[in-house]
Length: 150
Image 1 (tube, helix red, strand yellow):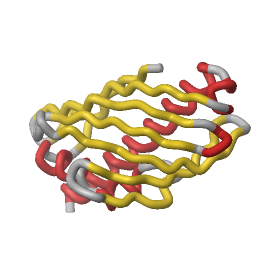
Image 2 (tube, rainbow, N blue to C red):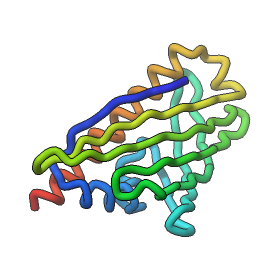
Image 3 (cartoon, one colour):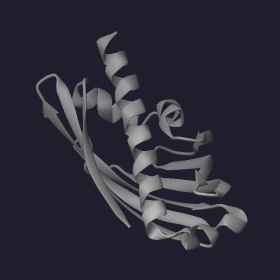
C-alpha cells in the first residue's frame, strides 16, 4: 500500500525540519501515541494504540531515520508488532521545499501489514492509513505553524 500527499506549513523550512526531529512534537502528533523514546538522533522507539475497523491493538516498534538529505528531507523506516493483531512495517520519504514564509512538506509512504489486521481488507486499511496520516500532518502543521508565529 502506498500513500502520498503534501501539506503547506506556515513556518520556515529549518523550523519544520527541527520539529520533525523533535520527539515531543512527534509524540503529540502521532495518533494514539502513548510513548516515544529517542535512543539516538536516528533511532526512536514508539508505543501506539490504533483501531483499524473492529481491531484495536497496541503496537510497539522502532523507527530509524536517515538524515542524509537534511535539511531538504529525510527518509524513515519502521516496524511495529501488535501481538495477536499482527504487524505493520513500512517507510516514508519526506521532502521539504521553502515557498516564501511557508514550507511545503511532501511525503510518499509505503506500508505492509500482516496478521489479523491484514484480513480486514486493503480498502479499510488504506482508508485508516489516510485518516491517520491526515491527523498527524494537520496536528503537526498546527503545532509548528503556531510556534513559528509566536
